[in-house]
Structures are given as structure tokens and as C-alpha cells.
Amino acid sequence: MEKLRNIGPKSSRELREIGIETRDDLAQSGIEETTRRLLFRFGSEKKISVNYLYALEGAIHDHDWRDITPARKAELRAILDGLRRELASSSK
Image (tube, rainbow, N blue to C red; front, side, top):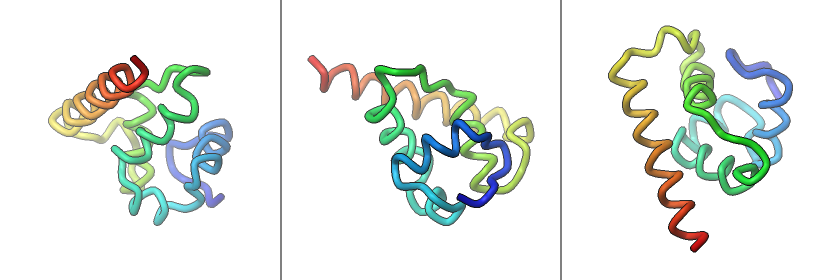
């Protein structure tokens, strides 16, 4: 896997496990689908945090996660909350 900004070795391994090998793969999949796959694959093993989504956003756009605007951070939090609800309702 190519070195992506904000993505460390553990996250790189997790992304490879869900079929994300490159920045182009990540951009094509998008934040929501990538997070859905991560939650499906790792949801019971680890907590996928909003910071993970910030890192993914920064990796897609090749900038530091701290440079994400407050409005975009709110959108990412909403995406994660929605996916968690979706996962919880589908597991009932």
C-alpha cells in the first residue's frame, strides 16, 4: 500500500483487508463506503472513531486531518453516527 498521509501501519493493514490499496481506491470508495466496510469488518473488534474518518478525509485530499473545516468535521460525525445506527439496527 502506498504511504497515505495521516494513515499509520495498523490503519493501512485494516484498509488493505477491506480492499483499499491506494489513495485512488480510497477516493473511489469514499468516506462513507470505506467506513461502512471498516465497521462491518472490525466493528466488534475495535471502535472506529471519528478521528479515523478525519484521517481518511485527510488521506484522500493529502492534507493534515487538523486542517479539515469544522463544517466538514460535523458532516463526518454525522456519517459515522448514521452508519453506527444502521449497523445496530441490522444486527437486531
